[in-house]
Amino acid sequence: MKKEAVVIGYSGHAYVVADLLLKNKISLAGYCEKQKKTANPFNVDYLGDESNSEVVEELKSFNVYLGIGDNKVRDRLYQYLRNNDISLPLLKHPKAIVSKYSEIGTASVVMAGAIINAISKIGKGVILNTSCIVEHECLIGDFAHIGPGAVLAGNVNVGDFTFIGANSVIKQNIRIGKNVIVGAGSVIVKNIPDNVTVYGNPARIK
Image 1 (cartoon, rainbow, N blue to C red):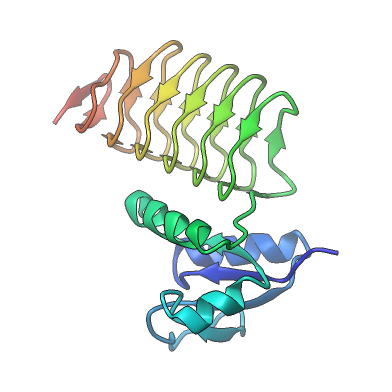
Image 2 (image 1 turned 135 degrees about the vertical axis):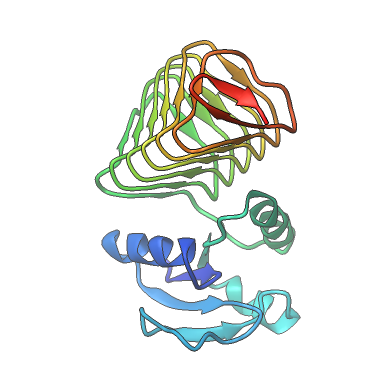
């Protein structure tokens, strides 16, 4: 039997995660936030602040999912929760297509319509957003975010914490560094170094 689930965060991205849990017939026991939210679209209980030691103990009874869009915040929460022996499973939409010859790390989420092809390796805490395509032999680092509709051709390498904006296209064999922001709709045809923002067609460093 699947454990009940708890979502960390309760807005924006967390709503999509909560909806995905329900689509997978996983019961949603509640959410954690710094403060109780006035909006409660899924009509679930507020369990408290996840940094509270009593709440952490309660979370050990659940599978916990990170409803946090910010890559660095997601990393921090992941490390904190894992250090407290909290279970953070992979979550996949039933209409995602994921090759059995690919690898996806714990605490990652694969949204509706996403396609992950053979021999790709995805790190932990990654968001593979709606209808993105990750082609064969891609390597995506930890706590990256591949935006809706983005296309990574074969053998693309994306560094840790990098954000690929919606509907961007990455040419085959390209290497994108860590902590990079790729603006929506960009076309990447050259390797990108760490710690920069790029956008445009072809994309250039801002």
